[in-house]
Length: 302
Image (tube, rainbow, N blue to C red; front, side, top):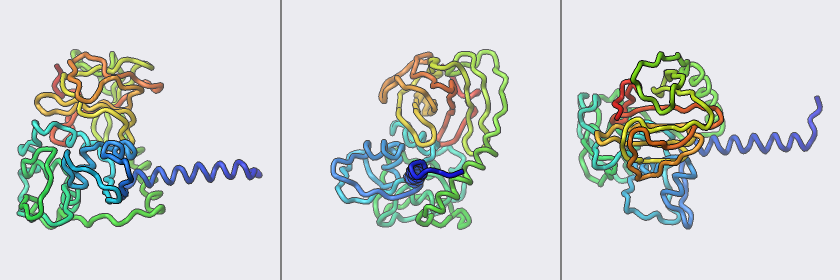
């Protein structure tokens, strides 16, 4: 079949757009431009402000300077959920990671929570848990912190990502998603409150734990446990997302919404509508404690 020059041009354009989007979604650096804010950059890369702060050792009061280079971390919804928690609810040291053997590390110039956690082979919430730090913690040069003692837990920092590497990573992620996202339908226990009314419930297996709920198109998505909206917006790979934190520190994550009505800072009661489903009528529902997933069916309601 002969492909016209116009169609070939369109195909090349679409491919280049795809590659550029994939590169944006990989671990990378970003040079701050005039008028940039952490909020605007987080929206551009579909991450949370808290993740950007952790990856660059920035406090809530730091002002960005034009020309400064920021690390744009790869997306991880477990990190995002934990770091979006209120500083009043510290990452609990009771997490299982606190039971591992530790040693003392002295913070060096350029260190960040994100960088130290990655080199230590753990996630940021786990590093916070080891040191009983809250989610707004920033590091200071010379500060002594706990890290895992085992040298085997260390991993090398990832090298710069090429387009070839990105393509391979995307293909690998697709295969992994197909392999790990084998969903089994869950029988709904009587009395379990879900964000949708009488949904089909399927477990998500693999890297991300939670459930997929299928209801009706444009159906109301309701909060299952009262709390404060810590984040709302598009999160990379999950669409429109709402994180709601309970008073006990649990983060209830509602993702893939068609539209969101809840706003950051709102205190919402159980049963309150926080958005609606989209055309596919499905959402993902996850619950996290200290960056660790809980069984959504067994997580507290109320």
